[in-house]
Length: 178
Image 1 (tube, rainbow, N blue to C red):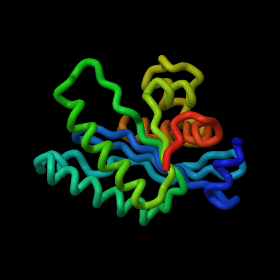
Image 2: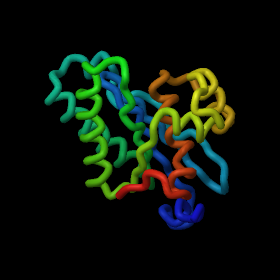
Image 3: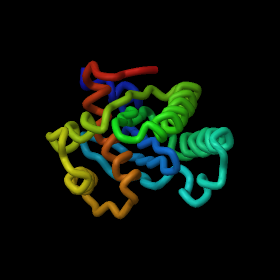
Image 4: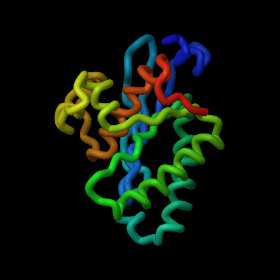
């Protein structure tokens, strides 16, 4: 079943989009997987934080959709992984993040991009071997996997980790959606 990821891209290198949704910071990471090796394509915030903070919730969702459509057009991902909502502390931010995730999933679905959803613990486990790894440990493994130092904001590094975790999802049974 691990060949399923190869089949998604028709046998060529696979472009994988990872997304770490947030209220004002949505990290995106794009990697290319070719012959079992990963390389960095892009890592940044979907919309700069100082710009997204200017808008009310409805306008933010429109901006998120527009920016994600542009990213999809520019980078042409074959598959995507979206970090699942996982909140215990701040109920105030749970709904806005859920709204953003809804727009993200809708946009991926409309673009025909297969996606999977994974918890932060699942991403950490796939990337580092430990579901309780620190952000620093995840960043170190992301850099090692991509064979380069990553100087991205935490949210973008988390999105890269999600993208790197994709083959374990699309090659297995967990979380695969269309």
